[in-house]
Amino acid sequence: MFLLHSFILGLASYFLLYVFISINNFFVIMKGLIPTWKVSFLNSLVNKQASIDIKEVVIATFVAILLAFVISTILNRKFLHKLAKKIGVSKKFGQLDVWSYVFDSPQSVWVIIRDLENDLMYQGWVEAFSDTFDNNELFIRDVDVYRNSDAQKLYSMQAVYITKDKSNLIIEFP
Image (cartoon, rainbow, N blue to C red; front, side, top):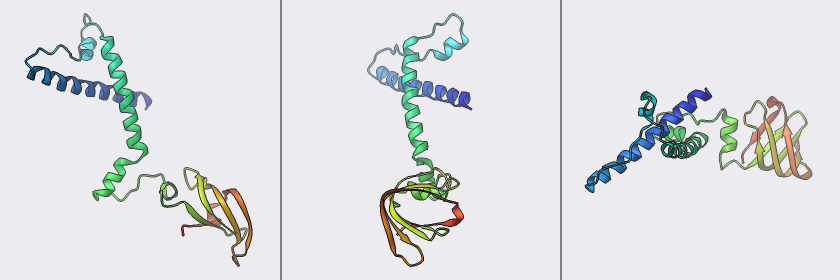
């Protein structure tokens, strides 16, 4: 899969370089000049006598790096899912599960976690969380701990790391 992605990224970077050079050459022709800049990569692949233009390879490499950052941003920030949701094509949110969706949301910072097994209730700010609900790890700050059955405050902590079986936790977002 890595080789396929690398190949596609290489082709895309050369395609963008070709588009940029074509636009540049269009404006050069409009000024009445003769364009001297061209993409010679494909010619050097099929013609044994053609040499590889090192300057072109370096420029295509920089284009590939920039393109990789753009593609990573689009994928990691789920722009395609957000666009599809916005225009009504999809209702998917683009995360692995609802756990990631809820905790990646900027609105979900203060939580109440009810540990049903130990009759405890934690209130605090979410500092970090696991990628999926299967691991269900939470690290919360400025924590007040209460007894769940009667809401009596037991103690306060600067931070608490919580990992429990998912059937014993209820997470609320007040």
